Amino acid sequence: MSLQPEHGYQIRSRLGEAADPRWIPLYVTLGFLVIFLATVVALFAGTTLFGIGEDTGITLAQIQEVLFNVETAIIIRDTIAIGIGAGAISAAIGAIYAWLVIRTDMPGARLFRIIVILPLSMPFIVKGIGWIAVLNPQFGIVNVFFRETFGFILFDIYSIWGIIFAIGFGGLPLAFLITEPAVRSIDPSLEESSRIAGRGLLGTFVRVTLPLLFPAMFSTFMLVMIFSLGNFDYPFLLGASQGGIDTLATEIFAVIRGTPIPKYNVAGIYSLVYVLIAFIAITIYWLTTRKSYKYQTVSGGSRQTVHNLGRWKYLAIAICLTLWGLSFVAPFLGMLFMSLTPRISAMFSLQFTLANYAELFSIPSLTDVVVNTLVAGFAAGLLTAILATFIAYTSLKYDRFTGLGDYVSTIPLGFPPIVYGLAIFWLVLLLPGVSATYGTIIPLVLALVFTRLPHGTRMITSNLIQISDELEEASSISGASWTTTFQKVIVPLIKGGVTNAFLYSFIGSMRELGAVVLLITAGNNVLTNLLLQMYSQDASALPTVAAGSMMLFLMILVFVLFYESIGAGKYNARM
Image (cartoon, helix red, strand yellow):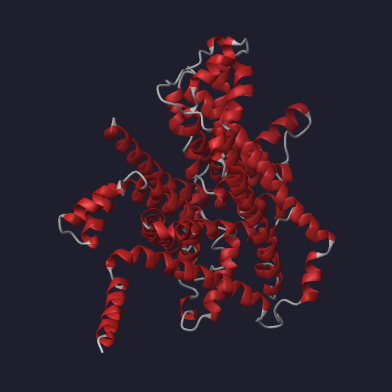
């Protein structure tokens, strides 16, 4: 009867293998997947099965009433139009800017490479306030100048074209960072062959360079489009509040926070449509770029050439200055002037005062709001970096679970930020023992982690993929446990990626509004939402809102410059 001992040994062996520390990254990945799926289930269950007050959940009649009408069709059309328009602008200007900076002899190219990241320090709501100060039809600095000089306004920012313009040019930093490596990797022999065949510099750029940059440009287009579909800040400031232009994000906010009795069932219907559109966009992106070998051009022995612009170098400087100015300088100056003006009507008179800052700092809750912003951002950045490290390890170091790691790191992109806010609201409400966290920063942190995790995982993956498995094998042969190997070998080698993931998530969390706007209470308010509340309650308080925007911008700028200094330090160390 020897089967019994052998059977008991097998059970103990399997239990011991399951408890092996080397499976910790997999368990963390599975744990996050469970939390994410619980959030999705809570969203669907809360909006379809349960209700609050007169809200009885989603019914077929309500779906027909909400979706099958002209107003909803217009909202969906405007949402998609904003996404496509902004994505196209960002892809185009990112390719032009990167090519001029990297592949030409334009003077000041190194400076343009550095300053392109500055727009990252301006939250979207801050940029929106800046654009209002510049292009408001009544008091915007530029429009007042054109009206008094030429008799017409230059551009109405309160329009769907204004939203597309603001998001599209605001996407320059992301577009440049995505396109720059592709520009550096182009085989110069292809461009040289085009020049020998008789095409000029512009013809070669259009007929050869741009087609080779298609994967990077399409990635920019899709990422900016997906972001634009879920963006709340710009459509609310420039559309819903003034121009009468609604998107799915602003409509979800309106039916929950803009009515005496929140209509969570209607918000749930809009959220389902939102998720469907986002997943269609992600699927198109995946199907289009999966055969990336079609665009492979890098071969051994090629050298990067720099095109001589000759007399056109000053035009190149003008182009880069214009693109960067529209991405950063114009909204920044508008915000600055607005924050220093005594009243809206005095903006063009160049009368300056610090009274708006004094009024801002007199707000009793300001200190608590600033602390909440920093704590929520730090917690979200730290948690994102930790989770992203384990998920990246799962996707690269476990052959059997590569697909799981990729799936977990990608699927959060399919949910717009404001939908996360609604989903986490229902999760906190329905999950036993968790409702006590409502009104704290915990739901905010969870929403911020969901929105930042895909990007953080990719930052660490790009670092971890360079580490050979031989290092872990050598450590194991020398007698080190997996835990020791992970702490002493893996983590030090990927600390650059982990640091980038933390800082990027920290900075991004401080800028975020859409993911947290539905979770804010009196006890967990953050700066972006405070600015939104001030703007919504009193339009004449716009100068004070601009002062608050300036303060938030300076706070984030410190961390952006610190982030860039770390990157520069690592680059110099490698040199």
